[in-house]
Length: 150
Image (cartoon, rainbow, N blue to C red; front, side, top):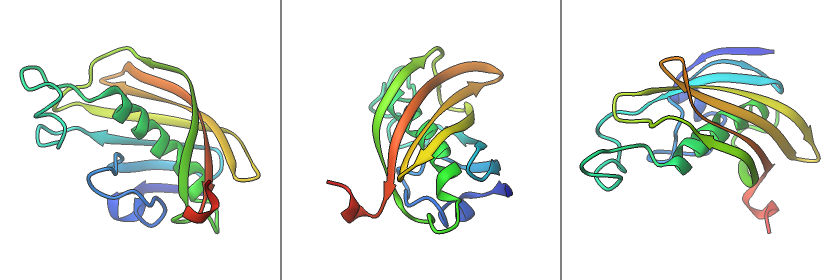
């Protein structure tokens, strides 16, 4: 099944994250259980820019990684029965930040699920700004209800 053009309201049907920690503005295409494409527009009004860094604001690397994980998680959370389940990242590998992401940038994200068994998901995601790779990583996360996690 393929889902297309999910806006923030539609994303909230699947992803439990909310403002200010919802880091996906749109999921342009989701091949359920396989891959996803989407983006986050970083405006000058983001809550973290005044402190990271006031004279030369950039998107914190861990928030870039979180955006990658959130889009990757939509490949699993769109599987019937997984809507609104929580994700718990447990491992990141080969995480790279190759370009600064600054106010006004659109981070276009491409994510691919490589395995999903026993509520453990594994995959990779890459973010681009104006066609240039900005960040990437491989991630493992658990999927479940809050009480399922120790």
